[in-house]
Image (cartoon, rainbow, N blue to C red; front, top):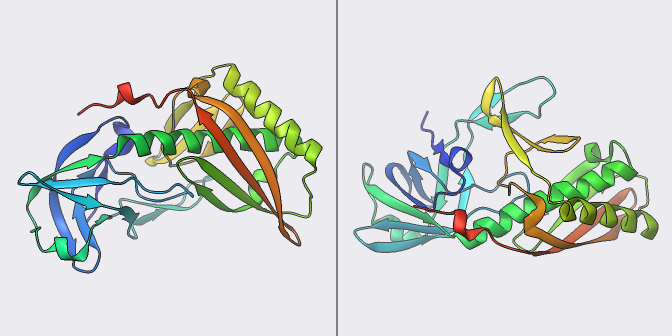
Length: 249
C-alpha cells in the first residue's frame, strides 16, 4: 500500500522539505513519499502551501488522508495509520508532475501556527468543561478548528447556563495565564496514536499544537442551543505570539 511518512509529527516546525512524487490522482492531486503538511483531521483544517518544481510554485489548497491501516488499541479511539496523503492542487497543474519527480513542499507557517494555537485552545476549554461537567467530552459529536476560532458540538440533555460558561471561560484563562507546558507524545504501541497532555488532562489527539499556553490570551467562550439535546460551544481567542521564530528549513 502506498503511504506517506508524516513528518509533521516528528518535526513540527519544518517549513520546507524535498519529497518524491509516488502517486498522482488525476482528479485530485499529488501523493508524496513524505510530507510536513498536516491533513484535515480531528476537526482541524489542513495546512496549505506550495509544491515547488523547477522553481515553479504550485499552490496546494487542501490536504486529505486516504484510507490506511486501522489500529485497535485499548482505551484509544479507532484510527487509521500509514495513510496516503493527497495534496490537492488545481486540476490543470496536475499534468506538470510525474511519478518519481523530486519536489519541494513548503507550508504556510502562519496558518500552521494559528491552527496549532487554536487546537490547543480548544483542549484547554474542554478542560474547563470537564471541570464543570465531568465526562462531557464523551458527548462530542462534532468539532471545527479554524485559524482564529473553533467550536465543539455536544449531544447532551444538559443546558449550559451563562454561569457555567463564565466558570469555563475563567478556568481556561487561568490556565493560559499560568504559562503551562503542554506535552505531546505517542502511544508505546503505535507512533501515530498521539496524546495531548496538560496537568491532569490527557486526551487522544493527532492534531498540531503549541508547547506552552503562553502564546494564548483572552479566551472567550459562548454557547449556542442547537435544538433538543444538542449544545454548541464557540471559542475565540487572541495570540501573544505566533512563535514564528521556531520554524526552519
